[in-house]
Image (cartoon, rainbow, N blue to C red; front, side, top):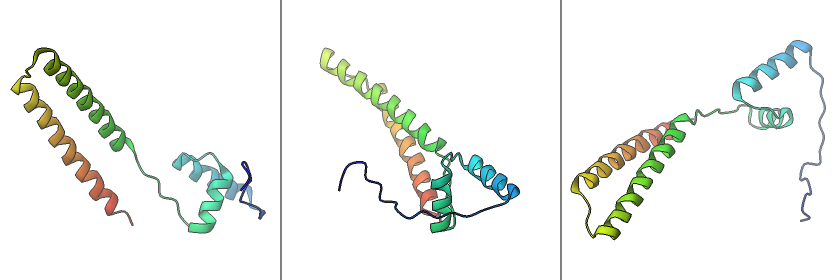
Length: 114
């Protein structure tokens, strides 16, 4: 297949009232969608769009980065001094356990989406 070749070759046109167009724009804005063609195509094919609030996922990623940075610092200290503090390891274990609990809740929430 050639690069840049668009698989979409069938054009569909329809007319709507100003009020309907405003409703469509409003629903797109609620979902954070800016591409009218993509929105109309998704609605025509599936009949619905699921909007996921990803703020919990972004928070989990932030917390994982913090734990990862801490682990790197502990590793550097262990390599430099030959030892690590038990309190540091306990703190990291507590944070990771908390992250796993949070991830479990998120995944169970996703599993309940229908």
